Image (cartoon, rainbow, N blue to C red; front, side, top):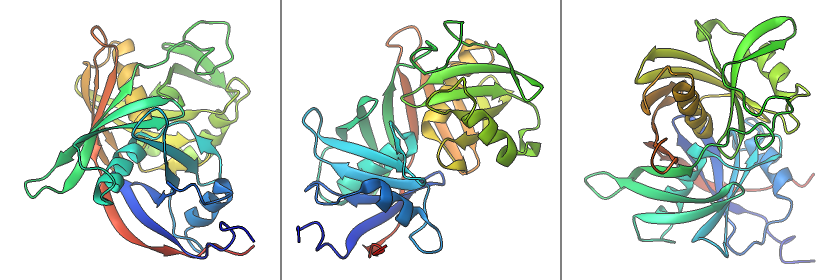
Length: 291
């Protein structure tokens, strides 16, 4: 029997960034097999730990550490904005790193994370250079004749929308809409997610513009459903706000779980910067199910 098969208990931390909660595991030794199945197990809120998914710390050949992120259905995501802030805190709190800045490899590239501390030296959040937004439909990906979608006419199930496509490592469709609290996302979300124009499925954000420096959003995440927060989604919303002439380059984005500060340095670096909290809820040992 292999060493991996003998593993009976897995140390973990449950963490959240404005309500976007994940289970965090140190697998620098790369001893855990079948991470997608483990993600499904730990995410289940009755028989598991309960979370939006699983984030695993791995070694990296190109950065200080590598992040692998799995949705609650076991599918692997390319990037998670709230998750990477919490992972940076997880690394620092685990005495694996003692500098205020670190580089973390993701499937959407290496991200630079700067930790935020309170007056007593505890990590309470982070700012992240999320890189440049991807606006080309072929790269998001969106199957369409148009090169980009900015306030693009879009019909789904007989309903007309104006949509903007943005990738921040994950594909997003942003829809500006009034009275988003009244929307039935349980019905709408899957219809967008699995539409044939989105070959890798899509995350969909419904957004109200409060002012030129504040927006409120709800998000349907592919593979997870409606969540309290989505960091890459908030970044996509900020980019879409600028592209549609609705907001400034720095904006406060309110989500169900809290608020993020997003800046799109459009004309200089082109990068998007996200700042928000990171919190550990609890830690413990998880005993994987045998079947």
